[in-house]
Image (tube, rainbow, N blue to C red; front, side, top):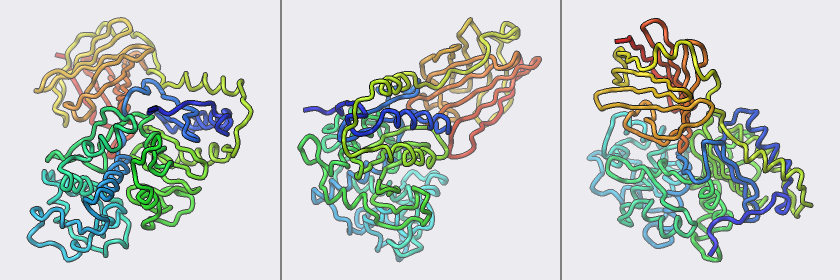
Length: 478
Protein backbone atom coordinates (compact mmCIF):
# COMPACT_ATOMS: atom_id res chain seq x y z
CA UNK A 1 0.00 0.00 0.00
CA UNK A 2 1.47 3.32 -1.07
CA UNK A 3 1.69 5.95 1.65
CA UNK A 4 3.98 8.63 0.22
CA UNK A 5 2.33 10.84 -2.33
CA UNK A 6 3.22 9.95 -5.91
CA UNK A 7 5.12 12.56 -7.91
CA UNK A 8 4.46 13.94 -11.36
CA UNK A 9 5.21 17.01 -13.46
CA UNK A 10 3.19 20.19 -13.07
CA UNK A 11 2.09 20.13 -16.71
CA UNK A 12 0.69 16.60 -16.47
CA UNK A 13 -1.46 17.85 -13.56
CA UNK A 14 -2.66 20.89 -15.50
CA UNK A 15 -0.53 23.76 -14.21
CA UNK A 16 2.46 25.38 -15.91
CA UNK A 17 5.85 24.99 -14.24
CA UNK A 18 6.36 28.68 -14.99
CA UNK A 19 3.43 29.60 -12.73
CA UNK A 20 4.93 27.70 -9.80
CA UNK A 21 8.31 29.29 -10.45
CA UNK A 22 6.64 32.70 -10.48
CA UNK A 23 4.99 31.93 -7.12
CA UNK A 24 8.30 30.88 -5.52
CA UNK A 25 10.18 33.90 -6.85
CA UNK A 26 7.39 36.29 -5.88
CA UNK A 27 7.31 34.90 -2.34
CA UNK A 28 11.04 35.54 -2.00
CA UNK A 29 10.75 39.08 -3.36
CA UNK A 30 7.87 39.78 -1.00
CA UNK A 31 9.89 38.60 1.99
CA UNK A 32 7.41 35.88 2.88
CA UNK A 33 10.16 33.75 4.46
CA UNK A 34 8.76 30.40 3.47
CA UNK A 35 10.61 27.45 4.93
CA UNK A 36 8.99 24.82 2.74
CA UNK A 37 6.09 24.13 0.43
CA UNK A 38 4.52 21.19 -1.34
CA UNK A 39 1.85 21.57 -4.03
CA UNK A 40 -0.38 18.57 -4.70
CA UNK A 41 -2.89 18.20 -7.50
CA UNK A 42 -5.07 15.23 -8.38
CA UNK A 43 -3.38 13.37 -5.52
CA UNK A 44 0.15 13.83 -6.85
CA UNK A 45 2.91 16.11 -5.59
CA UNK A 46 3.90 18.36 -8.49
CA UNK A 47 6.36 20.73 -6.81
CA UNK A 48 8.15 20.82 -3.46
CA UNK A 49 11.00 22.74 -1.94
CA UNK A 50 12.79 23.54 1.31
CA UNK A 51 14.86 26.60 2.06
CA UNK A 52 18.05 25.23 3.64
CA UNK A 53 18.76 24.57 6.44
CA UNK A 54 15.14 23.35 6.45
CA UNK A 55 14.85 19.88 4.92
CA UNK A 56 12.18 17.34 3.94
CA UNK A 57 13.13 14.87 6.66
CA UNK A 58 12.78 17.39 9.51
CA UNK A 59 9.52 18.17 11.33
CA UNK A 60 8.36 21.74 11.81
CA UNK A 61 6.34 23.33 14.62
CA UNK A 62 2.74 23.73 13.44
CA UNK A 63 1.37 26.01 16.16
CA UNK A 64 -2.39 26.40 15.58
CA UNK A 65 -2.45 24.11 12.57
CA UNK A 66 -2.52 21.53 15.39
CA UNK A 67 -6.14 22.56 16.01
CA UNK A 68 -7.29 20.89 12.80
CA UNK A 69 -5.82 17.59 14.01
CA UNK A 70 -7.55 17.96 17.38
CA UNK A 71 -10.78 18.59 15.51
CA UNK A 72 -10.17 15.41 13.53
CA UNK A 73 -9.83 13.46 16.79
CA UNK A 74 -13.21 14.81 17.93
CA UNK A 75 -14.76 13.76 14.61
CA UNK A 76 -13.41 10.25 15.01
CA UNK A 77 -14.58 10.03 18.63
CA UNK A 78 -18.07 11.11 17.57
CA UNK A 79 -18.08 8.44 14.86
CA UNK A 80 -17.15 5.87 17.50
CA UNK A 81 -20.07 6.95 19.68
CA UNK A 82 -17.92 8.36 22.48
CA UNK A 83 -19.56 11.80 22.46
CA UNK A 84 -21.79 14.10 20.41
CA UNK A 85 -21.56 17.67 19.19
CA UNK A 86 -24.31 18.70 21.58
CA UNK A 87 -22.88 17.24 24.77
CA UNK A 88 -22.45 19.91 27.47
CA UNK A 89 -18.79 20.65 28.00
CA UNK A 90 -19.10 20.63 31.78
CA UNK A 91 -20.45 17.06 31.64
CA UNK A 92 -16.93 15.81 30.89
CA UNK A 93 -15.35 17.48 33.93
CA UNK A 94 -17.64 16.94 36.94
CA UNK A 95 -14.72 16.94 39.38
CA UNK A 96 -13.20 20.15 38.02
CA UNK A 97 -16.18 22.50 38.21
CA UNK A 98 -15.75 25.68 40.26
CA UNK A 99 -18.04 26.19 43.27
CA UNK A 100 -19.65 29.13 41.51
CA UNK A 101 -20.16 28.08 37.92
CA UNK A 102 -21.31 30.88 35.62
CA UNK A 103 -24.91 30.52 34.49
CA UNK A 104 -23.94 30.35 30.80
CA UNK A 105 -21.46 27.47 31.15
CA UNK A 106 -24.12 24.71 31.10
CA UNK A 107 -25.14 25.95 27.64
CA UNK A 108 -21.63 25.55 26.17
CA UNK A 109 -21.57 22.48 23.94
CA UNK A 110 -18.78 20.61 22.17
CA UNK A 111 -19.77 22.31 18.91
CA UNK A 112 -19.10 25.71 20.52
CA UNK A 113 -15.56 24.69 21.43
CA UNK A 114 -15.00 23.53 17.87
CA UNK A 115 -16.33 26.73 16.30
CA UNK A 116 -14.68 29.17 18.73
CA UNK A 117 -18.09 30.41 19.83
CA UNK A 118 -18.08 29.59 23.55
CA UNK A 119 -19.30 33.07 24.48
CA UNK A 120 -16.05 34.21 26.05
CA UNK A 121 -14.82 37.69 25.24
CA UNK A 122 -11.16 36.70 24.93
CA UNK A 123 -8.84 33.71 24.85
CA UNK A 124 -9.32 31.83 28.12
CA UNK A 125 -5.84 30.35 28.04
CA UNK A 126 -4.12 33.75 28.20
CA UNK A 127 -5.17 34.23 31.82
CA UNK A 128 -4.42 30.59 32.65
CA UNK A 129 -0.84 30.86 31.44
CA UNK A 130 -0.26 34.37 32.73
CA UNK A 131 -1.17 33.24 36.26
CA UNK A 132 0.80 30.01 35.76
CA UNK A 133 -2.08 27.74 36.64
CA UNK A 134 -1.10 24.09 36.45
CA UNK A 135 -4.69 22.79 36.17
CA UNK A 136 -5.79 24.32 32.89
CA UNK A 137 -9.26 22.76 32.80
CA UNK A 138 -10.19 24.21 36.19
CA UNK A 139 -8.76 27.60 35.27
CA UNK A 140 -10.76 27.79 32.04
CA UNK A 141 -14.00 26.68 33.69
CA UNK A 142 -13.55 29.43 36.29
CA UNK A 143 -13.74 32.11 33.57
CA UNK A 144 -17.21 33.49 32.98
CA UNK A 145 -19.08 33.03 29.71
CA UNK A 146 -20.32 36.53 28.88
CA UNK A 147 -22.32 35.95 25.69
CA UNK A 148 -24.78 33.37 24.52
CA UNK A 149 -22.79 30.39 23.25
CA UNK A 150 -22.89 29.98 19.49
CA UNK A 151 -23.42 33.68 18.73
CA UNK A 152 -19.99 35.27 18.97
CA UNK A 153 -16.63 34.27 17.44
CA UNK A 154 -13.51 34.71 19.59
CA UNK A 155 -10.30 32.85 18.75
CA UNK A 156 -9.81 30.83 21.91
CA UNK A 157 -6.91 28.47 22.54
CA UNK A 158 -8.65 27.40 25.73
CA UNK A 159 -11.50 25.97 23.67
CA UNK A 160 -9.05 23.85 21.66
CA UNK A 161 -7.37 22.67 24.84
CA UNK A 162 -10.71 21.58 26.30
CA UNK A 163 -11.29 19.51 23.15
CA UNK A 164 -8.01 17.71 23.79
CA UNK A 165 -8.97 17.25 27.45
CA UNK A 166 -12.32 15.78 26.36
CA UNK A 167 -10.52 13.27 24.14
CA UNK A 168 -8.46 12.30 27.19
CA UNK A 169 -11.64 11.90 29.25
CA UNK A 170 -13.61 9.77 26.78
CA UNK A 171 -10.77 7.62 25.43
CA UNK A 172 -8.22 7.51 28.25
CA UNK A 173 -5.63 8.62 25.70
CA UNK A 174 -4.05 11.86 24.60
CA UNK A 175 -4.97 13.17 21.18
CA UNK A 176 -1.62 11.99 19.82
CA UNK A 177 -2.03 8.42 21.02
CA UNK A 178 -5.66 8.33 19.95
CA UNK A 179 -4.79 9.49 16.43
CA UNK A 180 -1.80 7.19 15.97
CA UNK A 181 -3.67 4.11 14.67
CA UNK A 182 -6.61 6.07 13.28
CA UNK A 183 -4.86 8.84 11.35
CA UNK A 184 -1.10 9.16 11.69
CA UNK A 185 -0.10 5.58 10.92
CA UNK A 186 -2.49 5.12 7.94
CA UNK A 187 -1.14 8.37 6.44
CA UNK A 188 2.46 7.32 7.04
CA UNK A 189 3.09 10.07 9.59
CA UNK A 190 5.94 8.68 11.67
CA UNK A 191 6.70 9.69 15.25
CA UNK A 192 4.64 12.86 15.57
CA UNK A 193 5.38 14.86 18.71
CA UNK A 194 2.88 16.99 20.63
CA UNK A 195 3.51 19.31 23.57
CA UNK A 196 1.57 18.81 26.78
CA UNK A 197 0.19 20.93 29.60
CA UNK A 198 1.53 20.60 33.17
CA UNK A 199 -0.87 17.69 33.75
CA UNK A 200 0.33 15.80 30.67
CA UNK A 201 -2.61 16.52 28.36
CA UNK A 202 -1.77 17.46 24.76
CA UNK A 203 -2.20 21.21 24.33
CA UNK A 204 -4.74 20.68 21.55
CA UNK A 205 -4.52 24.14 20.04
CA UNK A 206 -0.79 23.98 19.37
CA UNK A 207 2.27 21.84 20.04
CA UNK A 208 2.18 19.34 17.15
CA UNK A 209 5.25 19.04 14.91
CA UNK A 210 5.12 17.32 11.51
CA UNK A 211 7.01 17.19 8.23
CA UNK A 212 5.80 19.15 5.22
CA UNK A 213 4.60 16.08 3.35
CA UNK A 214 2.69 15.00 6.46
CA UNK A 215 0.75 18.26 6.25
CA UNK A 216 0.11 17.68 2.56
CA UNK A 217 -1.18 14.15 3.17
CA UNK A 218 -3.52 15.42 5.87
CA UNK A 219 -4.92 17.99 3.45
CA UNK A 220 -5.25 15.36 0.73
CA UNK A 221 -7.24 13.13 3.11
CA UNK A 222 -9.69 15.98 3.67
CA UNK A 223 -9.80 16.73 -0.05
CA UNK A 224 -10.67 13.06 -0.67
CA UNK A 225 -13.55 13.32 1.84
CA UNK A 226 -11.89 10.97 4.31
CA UNK A 227 -10.77 8.20 1.97
CA UNK A 228 -7.14 7.05 1.81
CA UNK A 229 -6.05 4.29 -0.55
CA UNK A 230 -9.64 3.13 -0.75
CA UNK A 231 -10.07 2.92 3.04
CA UNK A 232 -12.36 5.31 4.89
CA UNK A 233 -10.46 6.98 7.72
CA UNK A 234 -12.88 9.85 8.40
CA UNK A 235 -16.64 10.18 7.92
CA UNK A 236 -17.48 12.34 4.92
CA UNK A 237 -20.23 14.06 6.90
CA UNK A 238 -17.67 15.15 9.50
CA UNK A 239 -15.38 16.65 6.87
CA UNK A 240 -18.28 18.54 5.33
CA UNK A 241 -19.27 19.98 8.71
CA UNK A 242 -15.73 20.73 9.89
CA UNK A 243 -14.80 22.66 6.76
CA UNK A 244 -18.07 24.55 6.30
CA UNK A 245 -18.92 27.91 7.86
CA UNK A 246 -20.18 27.30 11.39
CA UNK A 247 -19.94 30.91 12.50
CA UNK A 248 -19.18 34.28 10.89
CA UNK A 249 -15.85 35.84 11.86
CA UNK A 250 -15.71 39.12 9.93
CA UNK A 251 -16.81 40.91 6.78
CA UNK A 252 -13.58 41.95 5.03
CA UNK A 253 -13.81 40.53 1.49
CA UNK A 254 -10.03 40.76 1.07
CA UNK A 255 -9.08 38.88 4.23
CA UNK A 256 -8.75 35.12 4.49
CA UNK A 257 -9.42 35.52 8.21
CA UNK A 258 -12.95 36.85 7.65
CA UNK A 259 -14.56 34.21 5.44
CA UNK A 260 -16.15 32.16 8.24
CA UNK A 261 -14.89 29.54 10.66
CA UNK A 262 -15.69 25.83 10.79
CA UNK A 263 -14.68 23.26 13.35
CA UNK A 264 -11.05 24.35 13.93
CA UNK A 265 -10.71 25.10 10.20
CA UNK A 266 -10.75 28.50 8.49
CA UNK A 267 -12.69 29.21 5.36
CA UNK A 268 -10.71 31.00 2.62
CA UNK A 269 -11.60 33.07 -0.36
CA UNK A 270 -12.19 31.26 -3.68
CA UNK A 271 -14.05 28.37 -2.07
CA UNK A 272 -10.98 27.00 -0.30
CA UNK A 273 -10.43 26.17 3.36
CA UNK A 274 -7.39 25.67 5.54
CA UNK A 275 -5.80 24.84 8.83
CA UNK A 276 -3.12 27.35 9.77
CA UNK A 277 -0.66 28.18 12.50
CA UNK A 278 1.29 31.20 13.66
CA UNK A 279 4.09 32.54 11.48
CA UNK A 280 3.02 30.76 8.29
CA UNK A 281 2.14 27.11 8.86
CA UNK A 282 -0.52 26.26 6.27
CA UNK A 283 -2.59 23.37 4.97
CA UNK A 284 -4.69 24.94 2.20
CA UNK A 285 -7.29 22.73 0.54
CA UNK A 286 -8.74 23.90 -2.79
CA UNK A 287 -11.64 21.55 -3.69
CA UNK A 288 -12.57 23.30 -6.94
CA UNK A 289 -9.01 22.91 -8.21
CA UNK A 290 -8.55 19.43 -6.64
CA UNK A 291 -5.37 20.76 -5.05
CA UNK A 292 -3.62 21.01 -1.68
CA UNK A 293 -0.83 23.39 -0.73
CA UNK A 294 1.26 22.75 2.39
CA UNK A 295 3.57 25.52 3.57
CA UNK A 296 5.76 26.23 6.59
CA UNK A 297 7.40 29.54 7.34
CA UNK A 298 8.53 32.24 9.72
CA UNK A 299 6.54 35.33 8.77
CA UNK A 300 4.60 38.01 10.62
CA UNK A 301 2.21 38.75 7.74
CA UNK A 302 0.43 35.48 6.92
CA UNK A 303 -1.95 37.08 4.44
CA UNK A 304 0.91 37.81 2.05
CA UNK A 305 1.63 34.25 0.85
CA UNK A 306 -2.10 33.52 0.51
CA UNK A 307 -2.47 36.58 -1.71
CA UNK A 308 0.27 35.16 -3.93
CA UNK A 309 -1.49 31.79 -4.06
CA UNK A 310 -4.70 33.42 -5.29
CA UNK A 311 -2.85 35.77 -7.65
CA UNK A 312 -0.34 33.40 -9.25
CA UNK A 313 -1.33 29.78 -8.69
CA UNK A 314 -5.11 29.76 -8.71
CA UNK A 315 -5.56 31.26 -12.22
CA UNK A 316 -2.94 28.89 -13.61
CA UNK A 317 -4.85 25.66 -12.88
CA UNK A 318 -6.41 24.13 -15.99
CA UNK A 319 -8.98 21.37 -16.24
CA UNK A 320 -6.83 19.22 -18.52
CA UNK A 321 -3.19 18.22 -18.75
CA UNK A 322 -0.81 20.57 -20.54
CA UNK A 323 1.96 19.75 -23.01
CA UNK A 324 5.19 19.01 -21.18
CA UNK A 325 7.44 22.08 -21.03
CA UNK A 326 10.90 20.66 -20.43
CA UNK A 327 12.62 24.04 -20.44
CA UNK A 328 10.28 25.49 -17.80
CA UNK A 329 10.48 22.28 -15.79
CA UNK A 330 14.27 22.48 -15.80
CA UNK A 331 14.13 26.09 -14.57
CA UNK A 332 11.74 25.16 -11.79
CA UNK A 333 13.77 22.12 -10.78
CA UNK A 334 16.97 24.18 -10.62
CA UNK A 335 15.28 26.87 -8.55
CA UNK A 336 13.80 24.40 -6.08
CA UNK A 337 17.13 22.59 -5.68
CA UNK A 338 18.88 25.87 -4.83
CA UNK A 339 16.41 27.20 -2.24
CA UNK A 340 18.31 28.38 0.82
CA UNK A 341 18.62 30.95 3.53
CA UNK A 342 22.03 32.47 2.94
CA UNK A 343 24.66 32.16 5.70
CA UNK A 344 25.52 35.31 7.59
CA UNK A 345 27.19 37.82 5.27
CA UNK A 346 30.43 39.53 6.30
CA UNK A 347 34.16 38.97 6.56
CA UNK A 348 35.80 35.72 7.76
CA UNK A 349 38.21 37.52 10.07
CA UNK A 350 38.98 40.78 11.81
CA UNK A 351 42.16 42.37 13.21
CA UNK A 352 40.35 42.34 16.55
CA UNK A 353 39.62 38.59 16.53
CA UNK A 354 42.92 37.47 18.04
CA UNK A 355 42.70 40.04 20.85
CA UNK A 356 39.22 38.99 22.00
CA UNK A 357 39.36 35.26 21.21
CA UNK A 358 39.25 33.15 24.36
CA UNK A 359 38.72 36.15 26.62
CA UNK A 360 36.04 35.77 29.27
CA UNK A 361 33.65 38.62 29.97
CA UNK A 362 31.63 39.00 33.17
CA UNK A 363 28.07 39.96 32.26
CA UNK A 364 26.10 42.58 34.11
CA UNK A 365 22.88 41.39 35.75
CA UNK A 366 20.36 40.42 33.08
CA UNK A 367 16.89 38.80 32.84
CA UNK A 368 18.37 35.60 31.37
CA UNK A 369 20.58 35.01 34.39
CA UNK A 370 23.69 34.69 32.22
CA UNK A 371 26.94 35.35 34.06
CA UNK A 372 29.82 35.15 31.57
CA UNK A 373 30.47 35.19 27.83
CA UNK A 374 33.51 33.80 26.04
CA UNK A 375 34.08 34.08 22.28
CA UNK A 376 36.58 31.87 20.49
CA UNK A 377 37.59 32.35 16.85
CA UNK A 378 39.54 29.65 15.01
CA UNK A 379 39.68 30.03 11.23
CA UNK A 380 36.19 29.66 9.78
CA UNK A 381 34.74 28.36 13.04
CA UNK A 382 33.63 30.33 16.07
CA UNK A 383 32.17 29.47 19.44
CA UNK A 384 30.11 31.67 21.71
CA UNK A 385 29.92 30.26 25.25
CA UNK A 386 27.46 31.61 27.79
CA UNK A 387 27.55 30.42 31.39
CA UNK A 388 24.96 30.61 34.13
CA UNK A 389 24.31 28.70 37.35
CA UNK A 390 23.00 25.80 35.28
CA UNK A 391 26.20 25.38 33.30
CA UNK A 392 27.57 26.26 29.88
CA UNK A 393 25.50 27.08 26.77
CA UNK A 394 27.50 26.97 23.53
CA UNK A 395 26.80 28.18 20.02
CA UNK A 396 29.13 27.02 17.26
CA UNK A 397 29.07 28.81 13.92
CA UNK A 398 30.79 28.42 10.55
CA UNK A 399 31.77 31.08 8.06
CA UNK A 400 30.01 30.89 4.69
CA UNK A 401 28.22 27.66 5.63
CA UNK A 402 25.92 26.15 8.23
CA UNK A 403 27.29 24.52 11.36
CA UNK A 404 24.72 21.96 12.50
CA UNK A 405 24.22 21.16 16.15
CA UNK A 406 21.96 22.07 19.05
CA UNK A 407 21.50 25.40 20.74
CA UNK A 408 19.25 26.88 23.37
CA UNK A 409 16.21 28.63 21.99
CA UNK A 410 16.43 32.00 23.72
CA UNK A 411 15.18 33.04 26.18
CA UNK A 412 14.53 29.50 27.51
CA UNK A 413 18.08 28.25 27.95
CA UNK A 414 16.84 24.79 28.97
CA UNK A 415 15.07 24.27 25.65
CA UNK A 416 17.66 22.84 23.27
CA UNK A 417 16.66 22.73 19.62
CA UNK A 418 18.42 21.50 16.47
CA UNK A 419 20.08 24.56 14.99
CA UNK A 420 22.19 25.60 12.04
CA UNK A 421 24.48 28.55 12.69
CA UNK A 422 26.74 30.76 10.66
CA UNK A 423 28.84 33.73 11.68
CA UNK A 424 30.86 36.54 10.20
CA UNK A 425 32.48 39.84 11.10
CA UNK A 426 29.99 42.47 9.97
CA UNK A 427 32.38 45.26 11.04
CA UNK A 428 35.96 45.21 12.34
CA UNK A 429 34.62 45.35 15.92
CA UNK A 430 31.37 43.38 15.46
CA UNK A 431 30.77 39.65 15.11
CA UNK A 432 27.29 38.50 14.06
CA UNK A 433 25.92 34.99 14.42
CA UNK A 434 22.77 33.76 12.72
CA UNK A 435 20.98 30.73 14.17
CA UNK A 436 18.19 28.96 12.29
CA UNK A 437 16.27 26.61 14.56
CA UNK A 438 15.19 24.54 11.59
CA UNK A 439 12.40 22.61 13.28
CA UNK A 440 10.76 25.88 14.30
CA UNK A 441 9.89 29.19 12.58
CA UNK A 442 12.60 30.99 14.51
CA UNK A 443 15.89 32.55 13.46
CA UNK A 444 17.90 34.36 16.14
CA UNK A 445 20.60 36.87 15.25
CA UNK A 446 23.24 37.58 17.89
CA UNK A 447 25.47 40.63 17.48
CA UNK A 448 28.61 40.96 19.62
CA UNK A 449 30.15 44.43 19.59
CA UNK A 450 33.61 44.73 21.12
CA UNK A 451 34.90 48.05 22.43
CA UNK A 452 37.93 48.28 24.67
CA UNK A 453 37.43 46.02 27.69
CA UNK A 454 33.69 45.66 27.05
CA UNK A 455 31.39 43.55 24.89
CA UNK A 456 27.72 44.19 24.15
CA UNK A 457 25.68 41.26 22.87
CA UNK A 458 22.30 42.04 21.30
CA UNK A 459 19.76 39.47 20.13
CA UNK A 460 16.87 39.64 17.69
CA UNK A 461 14.42 36.99 16.52
CA UNK A 462 12.66 37.05 13.16
CA UNK A 463 9.16 36.46 14.59
CA UNK A 464 7.71 36.26 18.08
CA UNK A 465 4.46 36.54 20.01
CA UNK A 466 6.00 39.43 21.93
CA UNK A 467 9.03 41.68 21.43
CA UNK A 468 11.48 40.51 18.77
CA UNK A 469 14.50 42.09 20.45
CA UNK A 470 16.00 40.59 23.58
CA UNK A 471 17.78 42.41 26.41
CA UNK A 472 21.28 43.65 25.61
CA UNK A 473 23.96 41.75 27.48
CA UNK A 474 26.87 43.91 28.61
CA UNK A 475 30.11 42.22 29.65
CA UNK A 476 33.43 43.38 31.04
CA UNK A 477 36.72 41.59 30.50
CA UNK A 478 38.04 39.77 33.55
